Length: 584
Image 1 (cartoon, one colour):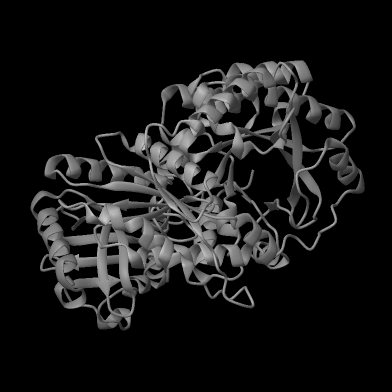
Image 2: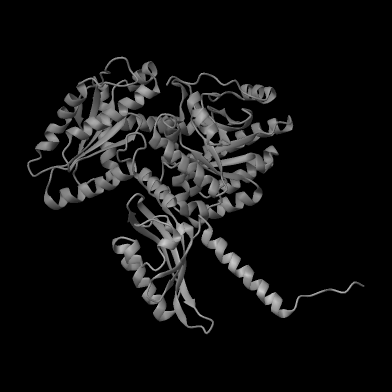
């Protein structure tokens, strides 16, 4: 047996010491990590190269040796850092500052997380401090952007429904307290669909932005202009004791919108008109004020458009129509009037179909095929969404099982609303649909909006966790348009983020939109989630997402929602034909 040779203890100790010195040298030379050592007077003893990033005074590492935070940084940040040092020297504790704002010339506003600890000699005496700093600037900016988007319309930058309802509540409280006349105006562009169809979506979007700007120019500083979606705008008129603003604002808006709008996407200025419904504040809840303004808007449309109408209790026709809609929906399921179309989901590298999204349609006996936007809201409000949602799951799983049996690897995505989750029947419905169809659970993707999970109900988390244990995947749909928060992405079992079409539309033409989408894509990668781009309609958008190496997308550039037979043809062919997309 060969004798093992060992180094003497002195040599081993010397070797370890050399290794430690090399480790320190490499750490200090690292360009990313920000490591620093300071003496008891706060003077720097050693710093890494990365520690120079963001300093008020730049330079090489050796140039900042001996300098204090007050000499290197500006304002409150330097004072807070010095206070932390004093506390560590006195108590020996470790201090973590998770987020701190620093205004650095040449770098702008920065956010960092610093962990500081006592520096001790071999006898255990505290001789200074040392720390590691992590740059959080990109993460914080992304969070701020998402928080802004949660309360603002991504196209126009105006307050969205959530922020509008909050401001209505404040306006109602002021009106009660100060005896003011205030009002909610619901404004809808007349025949906007024709403009959108004839000039293209790009011109339509430019028009909506221009309308929002012009409305903002007309109102007073105390008023609010917001966008609910589509061509629907809301104006909150915070009144005065005489109430003259309430009386005058409707005609003033109509006059302002009468002037044509010059648009880059149109050969000549575009003329539009609008109809306005007005509901005066009289102690109603915010949602009721919006409803009354909506009823008045319906009357304005019905009586010739291009006019402002004040709500009166006698305006019940809109309510009657809604009631009839509910009655029709109650029998639609038993009469087999609901059906599904499927929009292919495409692998952006191979252009092959990797899945489909099931989309609900209603074949009304008198109105023909009705789009979900015209009836899903009523299904949710009346609680019928549970039964209809179960039908969608059953039908989608059955169709996916047919493709599975034919040897096609095709995932099936099914939309799930917050109301379905609130009924606490989703888990049972999914298990029943999978059991009856024989579909592999891994082929099923449940798409939930941010609002469906942001409430953090224990029952919701339990249902989703149980479904994940079955193998079902979970996607967050329309990501960035709800009350976005990084926290819920950690709390909930999420596999996929679907970037909303409102961001995708401008990603190839707007640096701001591109920056937001890039941040969302990077966020998904950091969390290990798959990213799906919704609403790809133009080749320029496709090229942008290909450069970003986004894996999956869907939209009219590839295919509109189609019947199962058309999907089958794509699956057999292996790749869809990339069309010219919709007009831009």
